[in-house]
Length: 476
Ligand SMILES: [Zn+2]
Image 1 (cartoon, helix red, strand yellow):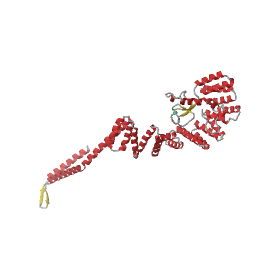
Image 2: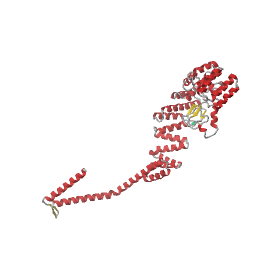
Image 3: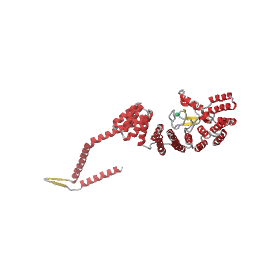
Image 4: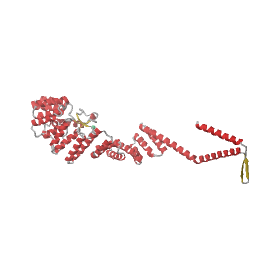
């Protein structure tokens, strides 16, 4: 609007000027050499105006002739690039949607239009992956490693491939390379930690865990349990290489990291006993009993008091059980003490109390033992044994992921490899993972330790207790 007004004002001004020049009388004379030009001011002004307009026109024409082709090429290049990016975007969408053929076609198109391979490598790799051409995808990912901008993505692609192929050594070295590039990326930290844990590189895993906790890539509570588990494995390695003191120190650190982590408490107790630190072992057992009584601890406790006579030992058991009086393990501890002291009535009442809280095969077997010891009643004993065969199994280390039991705790489930999933609990009568696979192996494993449970948990058969080798008893 403003421009229109300015234009009209300008036109009116020029018209007024022209009228004024035309109306004013006078003449203009230009003398140049022998030439003499005489004309009116209006004609001169008109000639000057035409001259200027013509000059401007010629200048524009020359400029267009000079720059035109270049502009056209640039515009074409821009359109081409635009179409390339559209193809790239659509290709990535196709890849995300699982359309392998579309992704491949658009990758080729984007590559052709953009002429910048690094940009389209990821799409090409994804398309190859979707089509199941892993080798081709690998080649694309490897090409991405050569370009700084795409190196990290290339590593990620290769890492996923290595994990899928079960090549843990390659996966670990790729995770380390990713960590070197971006040490604060959460998935890098958790992947590296997992791979190091599986590879048994406890010390490296602990270092990674600390970074992961600092970067909040892992929550504090599971992080502390993982730390305790890694320290426990480190302690076991130290014990196996004959360094009992280092093992005890590491076990103590594990119990400090996660005070309720029972595998570390069991190990620390065993190490304390192996080093002759009886009162330390007793303190560990007493503290743990209040929250997490465990038959392995009962066994160590029995070992500590093995020199006492049966009645004195029963008294010690009573003191320990008082820390958690209603727990079935407390009842089983008291029952074992009473059985040894031949206090049949007391043994029976505790076994029946344990049966009420958590019935399991081991308790029925103890009752069978009691019938034989007290009354020599084989018929009653047989009835209890029959009940045992139909009862729930005794608690074991069981993987919460696959349900397969194991003889001892470990960070990674020996059956499925899941981390931090071993729990002390009653296994399903038949492990979930075996439902589809009727192989007899693991279910036999599941039964075998349970069969020994009576003796181990009660400590009835003293000579079979762990010696001073510091190894944890099989916590069954
Ligand atoms: Zn498992």
